[in-house]
Image 1: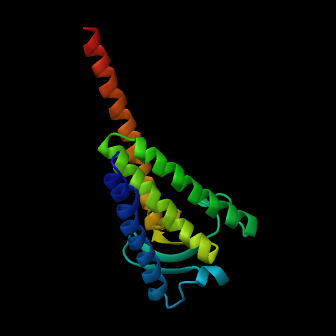
Image 2 (image 1 turned 30 degrees about the vertical axis):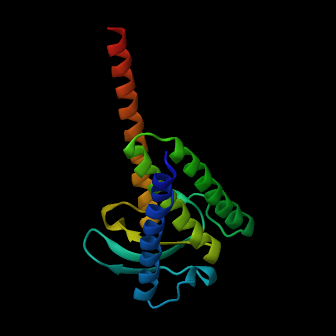
Image 3 (image 1 turned 45 degrees about the horizontal axis):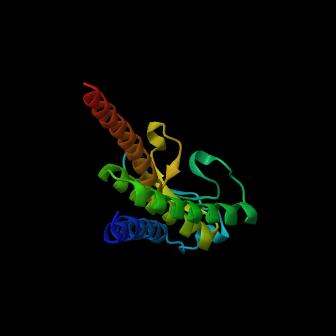
Length: 176
């Protein structure tokens, strides 16, 4: 992959997405009139009903996705932060080797999500979550960075599936 394209997909696009994620977290803390650093000092639990489907909530997630690894520990905080930044380096390396556009965009999303959440953990000890669909039975509150990761992982699965199909079709055509 040319350096210019790598800089765009591994740097510029994730940086813009990280900015959107951090802005959404800042806007949520402003909405509830608490400082951005609220997760460093407390575990707030504010909710504002937006619609019958979704609410705006403010929660601090000291664990990882789906409520796993909950609890407050400096070792866990710094370990998860370091892990996110190391995985970002690995993902940029994988991005450099990825040929298909869907895979590249998907990796950009995962990079943005990982760094967006790592920034929170680095500065505040917890990730700020705010998107709440518990009114319809989805009992996990998440944030914009989590959405990037989820969409990116789905994109990687689709990319892998499509690449596999293309390779099998090409191999079949070569045999015939």
